[in-house]
Each structure stands twice: as structure tokens, then as C-alpha cells.
Image 1 (cartoon, rainbow, N blue to C red):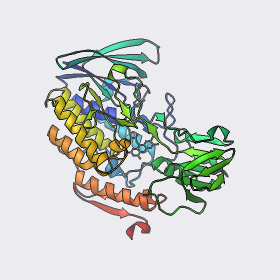
Image 2 (cartoon, helix red, strand yellow):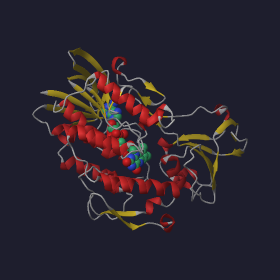
Image 3 (spheres, protein in one colour):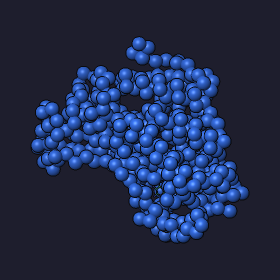
Length: 425
Ligand SMILES: Cc1cc2nc3c(=O)[nH]c(=O)nc-3n(C[C@H](O)[C@H](O)[C@H](O)COP(=O)(O)OP(=O)(O)OC[C@H]3O[C@@H](n4cnc5c(N)ncnc54)[C@H](O)[C@@H]3O)c2cc1C
């Protein structure tokens, strides 16, 4: 019987437990989780870690796209963009339904993962864990490790010229809780990704003035009266914020919607992946470490359909670990990695960090991985259509897209129950 350690009991760790528990005769699972509950980032105000969740957050994706494939949200929920607490309840109900809790050791932090031996392709691992209740440190030996720790813990903080002279506050989105701190303030939001724009929507009724600083060509939708787009920050001088086109504004707060960087500080040097410009290199199927094929990452990708991705990847990890399908040769894995890099980065003329950005490439990827594991992707045609519609609406109007209400009709189709008029043109 193989021993497998899963690190993290957020949505991706839970997907991994479910997939592995199909092979209970072949695999023994141990899961370590820092918090005292499942759900990862969806636990708002988690007392055991600094959760990036905030009070008014509604999911960015309609529930018809965001859920575990084949495990729908309760039928009585009509709205599509759900508040975080409903997503958490759903994740908890998934864990209960599939009896996943029995495998999880809560309040246990993985401090270190190291490879002990590698004999004829069979690797052994040591996972060092701290019991946060007793302080006891133990070591667990195992045959495979699944990293499901998410990628929203290590903040990316840009280093602006003159930053040390700034007289206002610089706040990363990780520390955002609600709009109360922004009443009457002038705010420069840096970054126009989901977090920056979500916070714009949350604070625009109380803030005095908001500047949205970005360089993303897709972000052109009209803003509210007290907001305007500005270019990237060139430098800061006291309270003056100077943009690359020479425009100067004064602001009380620079709000960083600049996202996160991958952080695997618990992996020892021997097994730590090489990360180049926020791109985790040398991984097969965007999840298996080619140098150590019994080390798996679930959920590295960005801007895809996270939980669908987790399930597809978890099924692949489980089938490989339980030896239901062969682990490809090193050459095959390297070719897959090179092909994916070409498709996601080189062919599109993008930067290495775009390796993990899968908004448009995700569906082919899920199909390829599912084919390998012999699985079907439930509702993938419907999900793809609705994903494209939601993304189009998001770029059209950040303020209103979450009012959309959709209904799954069948595996290929959805119905628009309600959308603000702006989306019908
Ligand atoms: C503010 C915000 C809004 C978001 N909105 C959406 C959205 O609308 N729709 C969407 O699909 N996605 C959204 N996301 C993305 C979200 O991160 C993913 O949907 C999903 O929660 C990631 O799941 P995960 O399990 O991979 O990671 P996480 O949810 O981060 O879970 C990782 C778990 O690992 C545990 N852990 C970490 N390190 C260790 C360790 N060393 N030892 C033991 N345990 C450890 C953590 O405690 C945590 O419970 C949002 C993210 C943020 C931050």
C-alpha cells in the first residue's frame, strides 16, 4: 500500500482526497491542514491564518462554472455569483458528502518536505509536521506528496521608485476586509485584475476618488464618476504619485491589487522547483514535477476554472499514484512541458509567467488530461460557453456582471435567466 501526504485541505486538497479515496486498497492518505476547517481561502477571518477573503466578496465566477463537476450547488439557490460564505458551505458539504474529513489532520502545519531516497524510480519522502495544539513536531514517511497549498499567500509587492518617501498608506489586497477604512479617501489601485477591480467596486460608493493604474489592454470598460484609469506608476515623491505619462496625483492610499507569487518554502532545496518569473518550470501536465515524479502540484494555474482544474488534475495524480496508468518516460514528460510552454507562452509572444494563465487554453488541457485518465468531464461544453460569456461580461462592465443569473439546462447549454441590459448589446 502506498502512503500519500496531501498538504492543504482547501478546494484543491479536497479534490485530491476524493480522487485518491477511490483507490482505498492501494493508497493510504494523510492530509495536513493549518486551519481547523476545510475551505482554504473561502474561510473569511480565519483565526489561524491571514485569509485573503473579505466581507463583501461574491465569487467572480457563476456557480454553474465554479463548482465540483458532478456535484451541483443546492437547487434552491437561484443566484449565480455567490457570497463567499455560500461557497464555503458548498465546499464543506462536498467534504461531508464524500467523507473526506476522516483523512484530515487539522491544525497541523507542514514545515518541511524532503526526498529521502530514489531507487529505480521509486521515491521516498519525509514530511515534517508541527501539531499547532501541542507544538509537537513529527516526521511522516511517504511515497508521494501532493502540494495543494494554493497560491495566495506570498504577496507580490512592487518596488516603486521613491516608495520610502510616500506619506500615505500602502495596502495589499490580502489585508482588505471591508470599505470602512476607505471612506472619504483618495486611492490609487495598482492592478486591474480581479482583486483590484473587485475592491474598486466595493469602495467606490465611499471613497472620494479612485485611480485605477494598469497596463492591461483588455481593461477599457467605463468606470464610475469618481474613478479614472491612469498609467503605471513611475515614481513616488512624498504624497505625489507620478505616472509614466507625467500625470501627478495625490492619494491617501496606494492599494496593491498586484497578486501573489508561488511559495513552496516548505520544500527542501533538493526538491524545490525552479521558478522563473513566477513560472513553475519543468512540470508535466502543469502539475507533476519532472525531476521527482512522485511530487504533484494541484491548482497551479490561474484564470481557469479552478475547481474543475483541481478535479481533473487530482484524478490524474490519483491514477498515476495508484499505478492505474503508467507514469510517462522522462522524455515524454519533457516534451509535454515544452509543448505547453510553446502553446501558452512562445506562440502568443507572452512572458514566462503566462505559462500558468489558462483562460483560453484550459478546455483543451482538461480534455487531454481526462483522455489520459479515461474520465469524462461533466458539463464541459456548457461550462465553456458560460465561462466565455461571464468573462466577456466582466470586461464590459465590472460593476454589473455579477448581477447575471444563469441556469444549467443540460450538459451543453445554459439559459440566461437575468442579465442587466448592458450585456444584451
Ligand atoms: C480574495 C479571493 C477571491 C477569489 N475568488 C475566486 C472566485 O470567485 N472564484 C474562483 O474560482 N476562485 C477564486 N479565488 C481563487 C481561489 O484561491 C481558488 O478558487 C481556490 O480556493 C484555491 O484552492 P486551493 O485549495 O488550491 O488553495 P487555498 O484555498 O489557498 O487552500 C490551501 C490550503 O492549504 C493550507 N496550507 C497552506 N500551507 C500549508 C502548510 N504548510 N501545511 C498545512 N496546510 C497548509 C491552507 O491553510 C489552506 O487551507 C479567489 C481567491 C482569493 C484570494
